[in-house]
Image (cartoon, rainbow, N blue to C red; front, side):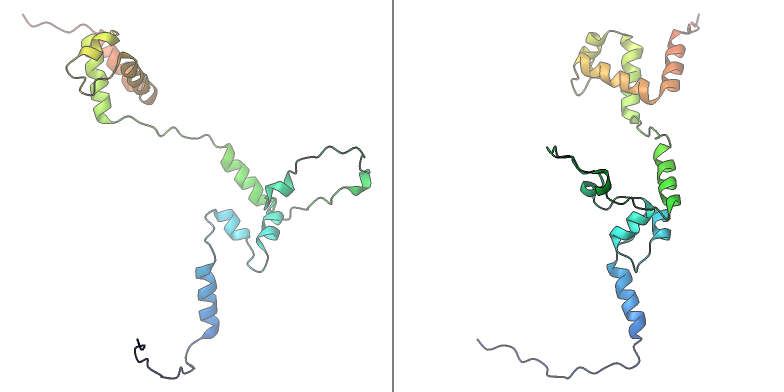
Amino acid sequence: MPKAKQSKRRKQYDYNMNRKKLKKKFIKKSAPRIEHPQIRNAWEDNKSMAKNLLEMGLSFDPNRTLPIKKQTLLRRKHGDRLPEHVVTKPYVLNKLQEEANLPEKDTKSCSSDLIEYVQHMIREHHDDHKAMARDEKNYYQDTPKQIRRKINEYKRCHPQHYEAFISSLAAPRPTAP
């Protein structure tokens, strides 16, 4: 089959196009965005990735940074050591270490359904996990051990809330005459 007829229009050079601006735009799009602000500010585009990371005190190739020592019969002389690299931008490494040393927040929380379920089970059965497993509100037919795990998760996620709930159960309720 013959090909469809294509237009034979000659491409013309656009004199009004700013080629320098176009090239910068293309390079900016093609280069990956560095998320960490300290690394992004210290990065130099005219240097290679290995040199940039080396200046910051970071490792480009962990196999070269921490090589696996091979056992040899002949020992090397002390003069054969590789030259130590000088870190010219230590503030990047210091900032990364500070961020790594910050304590991690425990953001795990329980769903409101789980909280309501656990409170109902404790309110009705206290510590009897077998009775909890036989309860009619146990829709998912959790075993006693699964219910125990859910209660422990609730204790871990909301310790103050759990203590307040237990203390409210322990307080005597006023009876109506």
